[in-house]
Length: 273
Ligand SMILES: [Fe+2]
Image (cartoon, rainbow, N blue to C red; front, side):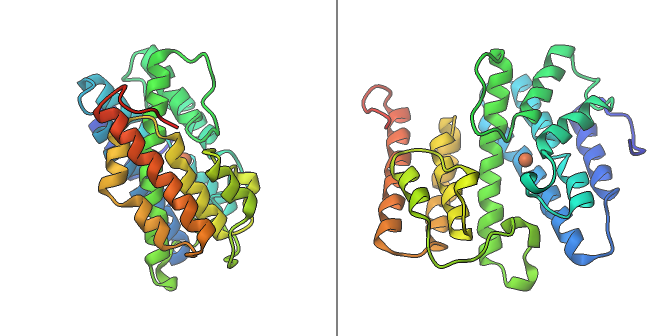
């Protein structure tokens, strides 16, 4: 582990994270841009986790930020060794993050039950489906980190598409080819109200649609409100081809979001599809 002041609380963990990121510093500007991407992402996920956890007690807010700060620790050694963020072509970065936590004393300032909850939330933050049978506090923390992570991945991806080519963090697009069309299988999944699986993707547009389908996997009303406030759907829509099939599924996801927001505003008044 890197040399830094002892970690005794959220503030010192946050300072440690800065030192940790600094330990991967690289003279190659393109490589460094990809490390910077993950450092900024982690800071934003941390802030999003704080916003989503607000109102649920100080301890929950603190743990949400601890888990957010640690969720992508594995991204740094992953990129250092494999020069990709594609887990299937390298290593499961969430497991690696959890392993880094286990092999360090970073979370020793927490009681064992909370340390275990953070460890599970970190290790499972990228699974397709949350497993059954987790302790309620662990499941809550995991759901929080997943929502916060999605909120900022949307920002990363939207910025990537609107940035001039030379300024893009090259690994953000995961290497999918920029083909003109969307795969029918991907469009059909979203139309059916389902999450798109990574194995279905054939193009960058498909990857954008996968991100759009994440709206179906959002757990907390506060996250849904942030999606709306930040104009996530409109911005993702602007990067997609404007044909009838795409417009139909954009409409579908938009309706889903509005319906869940209405359901939250007046529970029982509407149904969620
Ligand atoms: Fe991650």
